[in-house]
Length: 590
Image 1 (tube, rainbow, N blue to C red):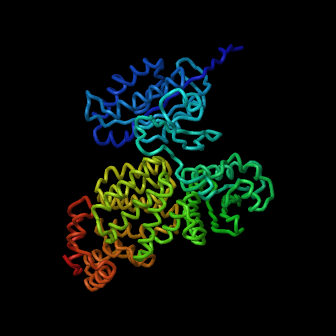
Image 2 (tube, rainbow, N blue to C red):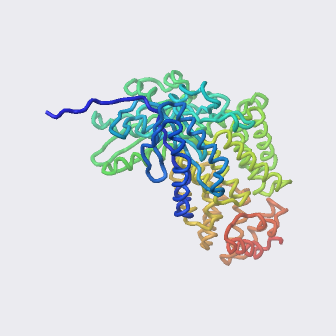
Image 3 (cartoon, rainbow, N blue to C red):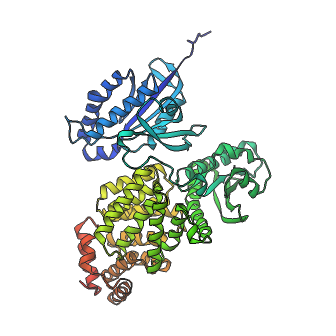
């Protein structure tokens, strides 16, 4: 009988670090990037590992796995490395590298030179929540070091991690010397209760076969994980909703027990080789169904089908919940609104593009940031309003408003660098107002890494890819947004971006189709009128172009072609020249 060596365990602080933006850096200059990474490891990271008593376990491409004897040593090493990178390496002043670092403490199995266990997996999962130059740690690490080092923590809350069976509490490390004037706070709302609370109940198997229950559980898990990535919602953990799997209770009773307003219920039915998934969103306060959908697919593609359905549900829910919250807020007296409700009130006015409504929306957003200066999404919406003011020709101080928009967007990210919405807004601001398209693309990629179900990030990023001269990629991003949220309130914007993409591609008839569809949803959006006028002119419909130009001037009598083309961020000169020529052909003033 074979004899096995005894299992050896020990408590270890595990660090997982990788290079932020590695693929982009490799694409730009693979040789220099590889040299910089090797130099960083040999000249600084590895000597510091020895200094702190750790050992390098593994290097895999751009990632490093490291063990330290204590949480304090692991965090101390990470702080030293990030400080050095922030200050710049004196030997390589132009080094482009920045690291994302995740740290966990757990009891692990020692297998020769390797460590095995969930603790390693958790460290590798949470590091993805760190931005470039940041350190994130689990609650276990926080418990060991909170009073032993000159640092503070931004609480990122409990997170569901892939293939980890329990929620993990995560914190971002904030060195005191770099905190600046803004207190660290990653959950931006006044309280958890202010955000729309959602409970996803276990999807029921209507086929009655115990062996099929895993599919409904998989759908439920994917939806909970997807919704949890949104910082606009408060999602009850899966462990708290399992108890309702076999209980017959009214939605209002469940909502009251869990402290939420909205309940998502669903079912799975197998019919021969077909699967049918039904889901329903219930407003427990009024006991009414807000949204319901049914999905059919083949059981031969069961897991692909599961992922697709979960993404569709996640993408559809957030806009629906926001609409419901806006409707409730409109019933409250203006003087009693708090910061969150000011944002909702602003959203009810923002896209009418009526002068009074637009000005009132700006005032509500200004009030929201005053009532709660730590509310990241309020700053992001303020930046978005200033961006619209510039793009719609409403700004009395275009240069100043552009500067204020950038400042507000940057403040939102500083307050909550893990909010996909804030990152997506900042991406558009950098593209549209600063013409910094590379930074914009990076911000959108970061937003979508955090939440691949964010229809807003997919749709709005499409305009940046139009500006980059990559219209087909822009259209693909829009298709992702529509798959997630086919009836999105911003479809007038997304259809307009589709029109811009087709214009950039030189497909004017297709552009006209998209833009007329956008006008049916919102007849006052200037970007639609501008692109429609140009597309009609270059399609040869001069009469239609002249009428479109008249409609454009009725909304913005101050419009001038030379002013518009001086700031519009098309990066390819030929595209911008073609756009200006088309607007002049239509008869718009120089």
